[in-house]
Length: 77
Image (cartoon, rainbow, N blue to C red; front, side, top):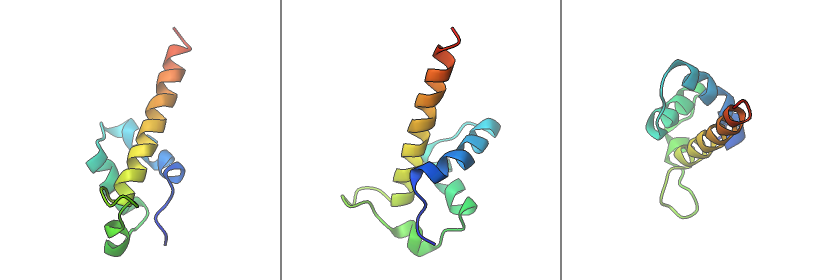
């Protein structure tokens, strides 16, 4: 399996966030478990080589969810 895109990670992360506070580290591990990622897939780096691809994509998913949550919350005030 290829490493899922950040948009595919959003729903499982949203479900996890409903149960507990999440960090990039917990998000990365949750995505590893949820998508049954292998060691080789977890070792893939971003093109810059600074971060793991799974952590990077999980982070972007978290940012998008946070922005959507902020917009939803502010529209009700």
